[in-house]
Length: 577
Ligand code: M6R
Image 1 (cartoon, rainbow, N blue to C red):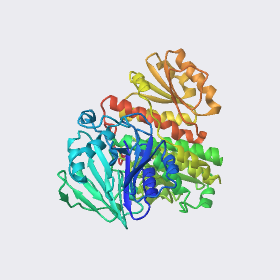
Image 2: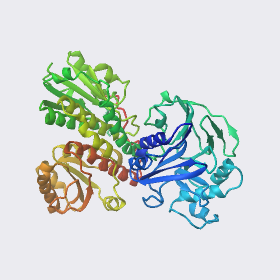
Image 3: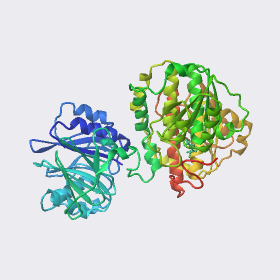
Image 4: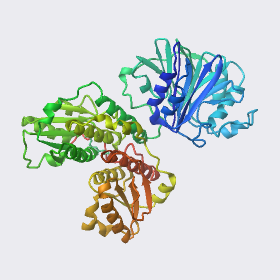
């Protein structure tokens, strides 16, 4: 998975392309690069790591014809030489590519050149294009005809003021603005600046200059395409080349967290802080994953605001003999804002004349119309039934809310927001884990919440019978189930509870259980497997530590042959009680 951003303008395009690549970073961030035209010649700048590294290198560069790429490595290791753009050996063609050229080894044998700068499939294609006869458009059309595989391509030629686009099975769109044309893998890149765009279909081509775009079919014959108005789109949603929405959404988490942060630190006013500070207690109510985020939300309020909190499952709250209070704020958390049990509770609170707040991910929903305050989460539309980015955005929104109530400075979270990335599980560890059919998740305090969420993900999409357990509770019953066929995933992200978790791990290993430790610390106990987390402030670790558990569930699910986006017996929005 990679991201492409390419454009032509009368003005300098470097900032725009780098800005676009930053928005596409969720698609891969191993390395990035741009190619541009200077005095008719192709120049290339590349960098390993995040886009900000490339940005530094480009600080003094000016160019108005630019193609850019952010890479998630498929063919070839992470290195500058394997980064895009790739140049043909004659230096006349530069391309950026998202997709896989499956027959690149075969295509290689047709090339005159035997010299390559990189180990990539893309470089082979750059040479195939260069070697083809005809004008620039014909070269690309003929080259693409030879390709087996997927591609979204932006191509530039020496001494040429156009950029060419080609697409098959990888997304690509193009937008026209005032004196500027921009192409991208994701239409969200156009969101702020453009009114409409065109989305290329498979085996279509385009030629862009600073004023217009001309489209061609698979034979290079001109075609007309319809405009797509951007206001009709949810900018995180249906434009994906990932096989599963769940994977797309897991990978979108850094972007969603960033968006949430920048929305809440902007000038926008989401609530009257003084009014909310007046509440003596906070009662969180939700279902499923949203209930887990409530457990953390309540912890944040207790920790930062030192106020009383309660947490209820909506389906229980409805029937409980609750002692309700005017001094309490009732907080309903729901990704969809349509969950029947949660809505029923919100109605009840409203009928009793009590104050409530909704934390929702959808602007127009039933819940928002029932509550007195709304805190939006900015995860973007979540399609997969298993909630991932909505969960981490709920956690992050509740953390921001607690910090605001406590009068703390939100800017301290900025470095986390910029650093947070989705980890790679590594195939070695996965191979050793797939054999386990009995899996428990243990953690204490905030890590207990993550244990519950990790277990829910695995149950819901991989249909494994697993449990999330509070570390200290194992010995009160569940330990009886632990044997040498059991995997216990121990989450340990709190310095003060590290030794207590070491005791839990010893208890498990003494019964033959195998332990996968998910932690940022070294522990003084032997474990069988380990996922090392990046180090962030403790209150942020529930956001960091849940990501490998989401990925683990997804890997188990796919390995077992299930579709993670549509688990059996479940629905995304549960609108019946
Ligand atoms: O839309 P909501 O957040 O109200 O949905 C609540 C639950 O149905 C939901 O979180 C469910 O548990 C997820 N499928 C879990 O991944």
